[in-house]
Amino acid sequence: MLIQCSGRVYSAEQALPLQRKTNNQGLETFPTLKEVKKMAELERKDYQIWGEERKEALRKSKEIIESWGIRMPEVEPQVLDLGLGDFYKVGLIEYWIANSEKEGYCGKFLFVFDNQTCPYHHHNFKHETFFILKGKVKMVVAGKETVKSQGDVLAMEQGTDHSFTGIGPALLLEVSKPCQPNDNIFESKKIGENGIL
Ligand SMILES: [Fe+2]
Image 1 (tube, helix red, strand yellow):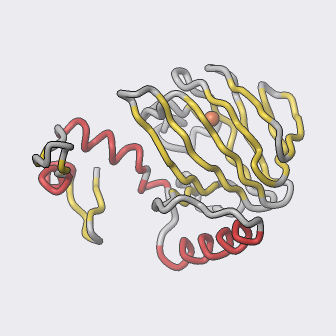
Image 2 (cartoon, protein in one colour):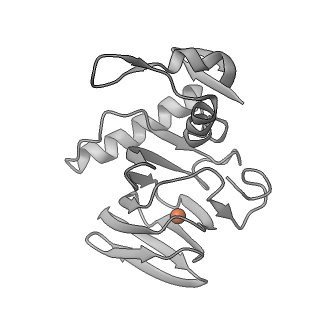
Image 3 (tube, rainbow, N blue to C red):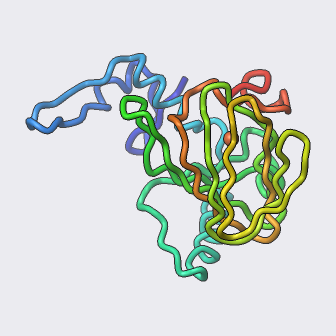
């Protein structure tokens, strides 16, 4: 497993001392190797697009989001093609604003381009609720198709398969229990390790 830090690539072991943080008493703290590995798994760098393709996707999405008058959080987004190499068909851009196992919650914004799909999956641990902030999406929930538009709310129980596709570009807010590695179980076995990410 490789970890990117200040533009260089390290193994999880090498990255360990680089992940130091200062706690509220001003003391340096170091995460455990297990925590660093978990962080890297959640960053999902192997499932994102990079280079010019990434820059272009971010430029295009930013233009749309700005035209809606929305300012996104100052975090590095995950520009996910989920390893399938067909970003504008299967993929999405995620802006994580919180994911705390300790405090028990997660919040992120999900952006899809027109006709781009976050593919069919479920979670065994994570319960999540979507709020459609902008645009319109076709959602498939447990095999049933439904259209959700700006202002709609949809809760997703554990074990319920779901996907969504932009009908035009769309922005969703997802609030949920914490995201954990291996809790995204995709229908397509080509994603992650035999469908598990
Ligand atoms: Fe989900």
